[in-house]
Image 1 (cartoon, rainbow, N blue to C red):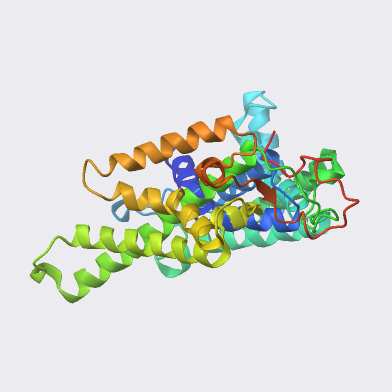
Image 2 (tube, rainbow, N blue to C red):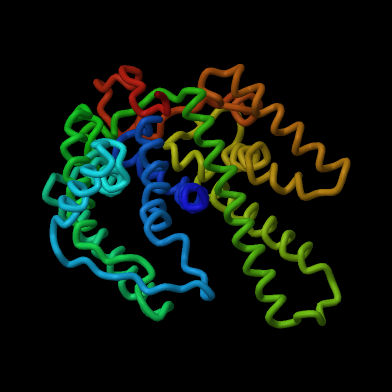
Length: 364
C-alpha cells in the first residue's frame, strides 16, 4: 500500500512539473493533445516510480537487518513451482506461481508504453526490460549501492527472465492499439489548423494557472532557503511572507513580460492560439490580455481583503464567458471584440480546411 501511494505521489509531482512543456510539445509534434495520450503519459509517470517503489521499498530496519541470498541458476522457478503445486494442488493461486506472474505483469506496461508512446519495437522493449530489471536487481544486491552492508533482497536471475518476458509481452500487446495512436514521431498534419474550442481554451487556462503557480512556488522556496541560510533566526521579519511576495512578483512579472512581448500568455503559446486584432490598439490589447489572465488573478489573490475578492470575480467572469463563447475567448475577446484563432491558420495554404478536423482537441 505504501509503495503504491509513493508511486502515485511521485508520478503526480512529475506530471505537474512537466505539464506545460508536455502540452506545448504535443501541439507542435502531433498538432494537438488527446485525452487518451495525456492519460497514457500520466500513467507512464506513475508506472516509472512504481517499478522502483514495489521492488526497493520497504527498506530494511537497521535493528532487524538480514542479508539475503543470491540465485544465479536460470529457470529455478520452474522447479519451485512444480514442488509447490505438488503440495498445494493449486496451479493458479499458489504463491510460487503468483510471484512469477506478478514479475511478468510488473514489466508488461514497460513494453506497451515503449511501443505506444515511443514507437519502439519488440527488441527495444526486451532490451529495456533486461536493463531496467538488471539495474533493480543490482541495486538490491549491493544494498542500494553500499548504503546497507549487504543485499536485503534476493538477487534472482529468474526475476531478470520474468521481467524481460513481461516487457516483450507488453510490446506484443501494444500491437492491438490502432497504428495512428502509436509512436512518438511527428504527425504529418501537425501544422494543420484546428478549431479553437472550449476544451482547448480550458487547457490553455490550466497551463497558465499551473505555470504561474509553479514559478511562484519555485521562487518562494529559493528565497526562503536563501534567507534561512544567510540570516537564520536573526531575521527580523516574516520569512514566509517575504518568500511568498517574491514568488508572486516574479511569476506575475514573467507572465506580464511574455504577454507584452508576444501578445499571448504561456497557455496561449502552449496550445497554439492567438487573438485577432479587434478594435483596440496593440499595446492596450496586450495589457488587457494580462489583466484578464492567470497572472493578474495571482496578483489580485495576494492582495488583502476586500481587494482579493477581485480575483474571485475575475475567475467567475472567465468561467462564465468560457461557457458563453464557443471558442472561450473570455474577457479579452469580449471587451476588445477579439476572436481566438489557431496560430497555424496563416501558415498553411488557403486550400486547407481549418475546420475539417478537431483531432487536436483534448477529448476522449
